[in-house]
Image (cartoon, rainbow, N blue to C red; front, side, top):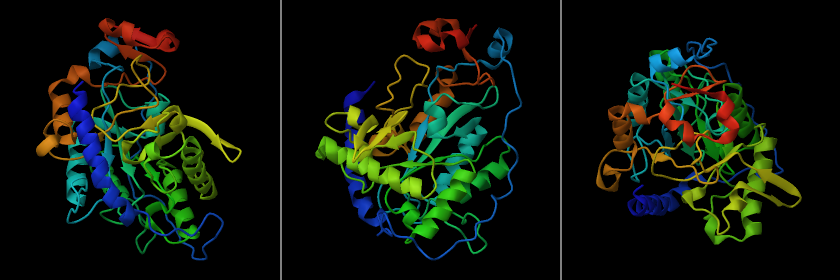
Length: 356
């Protein structure tokens, strides 16, 4: 791993992200206030069914598709979508659309971060999982149009647009939000947005309450940031968060406090804690998988440091090295791998292995 360059990229992304927080964290309605404006949300845009038919993998079927369920998985990190980018980590709607279409053409199927960390990777045989993650709950990620549908050129609107065009591209993503989800000004609108997303298979989870650098906080301060956001999400109708994205990718001085702890009598524990860059991740069945520090890839081109670290580079690299990426056997109950990788799997998953 190129740790020095990787650390530099993560640090630089963090500096840029500091400038985004003031624009992202709009005033909230407060933990105990309720808004009085209601939103009438309709069903999702039409998209084909993305539930794979039941499959029981065998040595022969795994070999036929080149299954490798210990291969690398791209967990792609997005921030704001702007028609005219301001920061280098911003993307335009057309850039997101183009990247998602490339993923679809290369056989990738989106899953949520929660599905990834819990090993619930249920995609067709021969397909590759990708985790689309959006930080900060920016208004460009999700909004209703006048008809109560996902607004065009928001992240959700674009995901559905691509899913309609490519039938195997499942509309799924993770939204890690702070105290004012999607920049919405009142509790009722926040509730409606969270409910719509959760009801349609998206994950809405914890990104801390006010997006601080957790490394600068005490153990109690870290717990407070996490618990306050978790309480807010519960009030908005989201299920308990299984995942946490670290603001700026910055880990607390005691990293364990990001994954589990307690504040004000409320405990928390996450199945996975995600960083801010800069490589694909191994899956949770791998011995090297670290639930407290899961790598992501910044969505970006190949300029500057992104020449070897961002999504354009890594997706191209995985296309050129198909044996290194996660390829599904189509059977979520088994883990199919080439025999040479048997020693890399965690012991508690050994009984599920099909090696060929």
